[in-house]
Length: 348
Image (cartoon, rainbow, N blue to C red; front, side):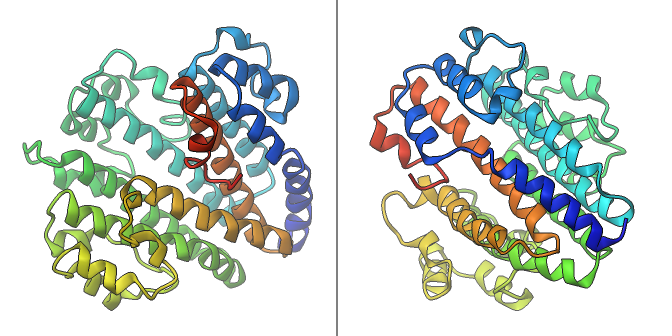
């Protein structure tokens, strides 16, 4: 299918799917509900997410079950869209599966490293192993991050992780997560190079800002919480952001502390990330995602015949699912309405 024809078909399909996204009113009603099962019932009876809960009894759903069904529904949406792509574009689209598989691997690592919970690993795997080879039996038997890395030998992740296997347990989780993100963006960049120059520009126009913000977040956390060396932080940085080149990122990595880093970031478009307020560390990721939310909404409205509509839709669906999970979590712990809104990506 010619690229122009492909985007006419794909964008029409996405326009139909987008019309079924949650409204502000849906958010408000869900935040006011009193239990995860009641939220599941609302989603099933009043929203397009009812398709995700088909043949399921909402009264029996707990938080983890709701999250699993939402993620499985996301897979189904992706499967419907990838049908329209072939060749290099199909390989590019497959990188989204990689992204969500990495989410699973991070979850498993946290269960093993922090919670020491080895009984519920399988139920946390929605994406992992679905579209590429992973030794699932070995992964599910892992009782340390080192064993997780060993289980990933022969996969696209292992070259980025193998240097972490040194017998040390200090900060291994953070390095593991950073190495996986480095793997994702490295593989993504290789696939972006193979699509049209117009689509490459559209990709970096959207994702470049996210790459900038991820680099800031990683540098900040690496300095404040993990005392990593500038060289080590720089090794995990990502290429091709919108605002910061190789030299600028290196300067950030060599800032003497987070205060100096904040001054460097202060007059950039991302100064909101390091304002120094009491909620900075708690809400940094949410602020990043909200920044991206508005960029994606704006890009989607332009309805251009390039990759931007697909990218915007995929990210907006993910943000919406993450918001639903946040609402379920906040309701579960009895959080007040006004407080719960602060944790959402979408501004209500």
